[in-house]
Length: 306
Image 1: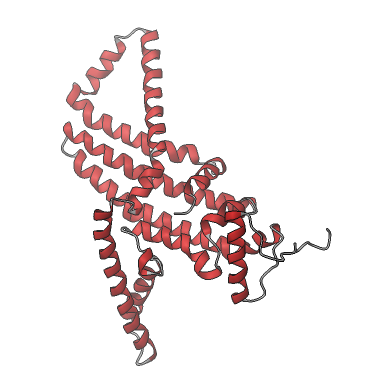
Image 2: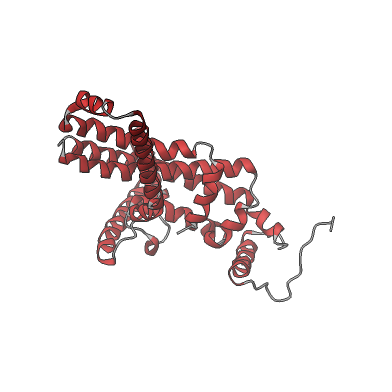
């Protein structure tokens, strides 16, 4: 998987809305928990009267304790964000992961067959409006999956992010994990902010999913908390996490499309002249970034100002 922790640290500093994104799911969780549990604990009026019986120092202490408790819970969930994302990608025990990988492989094969049928019909006699819409959906399914069968993950999110990681290698021969930290430092400020915000949205959606599942614990006091928590988790995954991952994938692909030559120039590698030559140079660049070895008989390509 791409160096997620590296980008997470940088994007958290760049995105201005990071604190809001962190705390919004948190306060929704605790506010919902209060709505569910307080009626079972005597109601709002009794709670208000009990708090009024505290002295002013006790009320201030209770308020400080409550704020600290909420912030600590936010910190703990934040620390588990990366592990939660990996779980949602499908990094599970082999016996479980393999079952879902086979389902995803079957889904891809079905989409490939549909694409072939529709693509043939597109030329003769042509597609109906409904078939054109179906073709768009089928292409979107294939665009959300890795190119090779052995790279398929157990979940839709895992396949989207795996494809994002593999695209630069398939197109240009560049290893995303090796190149990304170096390329990040060369990007314009606005591009880094856009990437950071896209990553922030993905992380916020993952936190919301996590808080939604935790909210189901409130079903001990109210049975309605169970369907609300489960529905919120399903919404977060299929309509928020998946969409955020697609946006992040598209921005990552565009970044390599537009700025990969900055990486060659900054490391004083020659710029490739052809597509075949680019993949050869990319292999040499990957080797240098991984092991520190330049190709044999390598000469720095320096700008005229040097």
